[in-house]
Amino acid sequence: MQNFLAPEFQFIHQYIKKLAGKGALGLTDDAAILSVEPEYELVLTADAMVEHVHFFSSDAVDLIAQKLLRCNLSDLAGMGAEPVGYLLTVSLPKHCFNAMWFEQFTSGLQRDQELFHISLLGGDTTSNPHNMVFSLTAIGKTLKNKSLRRNNAQVGDGIWVTGTIGDAALGLLALKNEINDVDGFLTQRYHLPQPRLGLNLVDIASAGMDISDGLIQDLGHLTRESQVGAIIYADQIPLSKQAKILGNSYLETCLTGGDDYELLLTIPQDKEQQAITQSHKANIPLTKIGYCTDQQGSVICYDSNKITMNFKNTGWSHI
Amino acid sequence: MQNFLAPEFQFIHQYIKKLAGKGALGLTDDAAILSVEPEYELVLTADAMVEHVHFFSSDAVDLIAQKLLRCNLSDLAGMGAEPVGYLLTVSLPKHCFNAMWFEQFTSGLQRDQELFHISLLGGDTTSNPHNMVFSLTAIGKTLKNKSLRRNNAQVGDGIWVTGTIGDAALGLLALKNEINDVDGFLTQRYHLPQPRLGLNLVDIASAGMDISDGLIQDLGHLTRESQVGAIIYADQIPLSKQAKILGNSYLETCLTGGDDYELLLTIPQDKEQQAITQSHKANIPLTKIGYCTDQQGSVICYDSNKITMNFKNTGWSHI
Image (tube, rainbow over all chains, first blue to last red; front, side, top):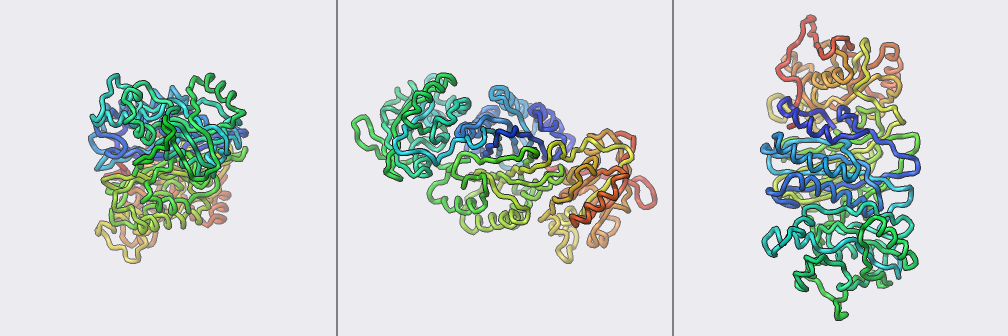
């Protein structure tokens, strides 16, 4: 982190400074300081978002900032971690260097900082002659050795998801005018993911991750790392009212589209009741959609007639 | 962090995976895990580097990667921290998505990982239709409450710098063909900064930072945060043989140019001997260039005739 702004850009420092919390040292030093209580360990993740790849030029800047932060927070949620803070680098074309742009950008972050009880630890603002590029590193914590991994699902464990699946993928179709988003719900789900923080499944779930590349592909990742297989049932996968209305022809989009930012979890059968209790406590819906099999590498999704579904695409590629 | 690569880009994962260390969980999960010994606290910094702003398209990719890493390590050195690991996001145009590019990019990082005893903790690779944009978050540690801050320089403390000042700024002039870099030393100093890690000044230096925006400007930052002033002597500022040959007309460039990545330190007079001992131990040259005054906000640089120097530019703006 550096004090690198020419005098005419010092206003930026004021906007960014408002986001800085304890440990950021008022953004005056080369780096931030973070203390970790001895019973905790840190969980760290980083993602980038690029104009023309991950968002449209016309998207609201506060929503872009919030989505970037929330995608990273969702990764923390996927590890069962509690968020602590974040570092952010922004590379911007000339037209962004004005108070209105920074006001909007930082107001989105400010809202989410309050919502998720985190603050900015540091970062960098640079120019980019071409397009907006953001990168965010999120830092969370878990009790030592209690983070949720992908590699511990066991044969027979139930497969569960939070929330509803596919809304964001449908939201993207709506933004491309391919479907009609009557009440704005689907678009909202695309722009503003809801990281499923606060669902305390320590010593309950056997494995977990966040769903960002599509349910089917991410289930493939989880089962591969755990060396198990999976059978899931399409008619048990929770869909929103808005997704259901669109009908079966959009089911594949829901199951293979990206950007859900819901959690995918495996839970041993004897822990199901505890999981449901935690789900009620956190007010986060949790639905069982299948179970882990001993058919390593096999992810089977049955339709309502118990026929194996075949998918043209199994997931979203960010490249 | 996500498993987000389409099959045709899975080769990238192999290159990046080689960089992953303990805690990165083989890059298989949503995030990395980092334990911190109870007597330590973490030091965190992030910087971005943008093609056409911070480096030329023709620059060697391994050097770009190393410079990005080293700039961040220099921030850690400025806080007196020991590096632990880093997260990296890269956003790349299509022409970079080939094995040769990734081989070169990761080989630079690999070399520096070995040199500085660190490893990759996580990150993200995305496309960018326009240009290369990199962002790196570096994580270090210091004993609790022992990090070097900018705000504790006292009136009477000596002002010291490591290494030689101005080489990188001259290296940039050489790359622009404005001066001749006979032996390649200056260009090398521009491309490959040397983070001054390992100079253990805990309980010796009163304040410190790395010099990235030019000595004069950074001295302004440090004295402002410490509410002191400064007098320094141009003829005591250490210059390399190559910089000296260019003569006095390049002195301003040396004192106000950016990219030094040397350390600027204030050291109480009764600790000077200890500092020199540490400098010998670490094999890092340390030179006294002036002292802190009670003239808050005043940074005076005397030339060899004891006349105050006036600078056209006081430092480098990254915007």
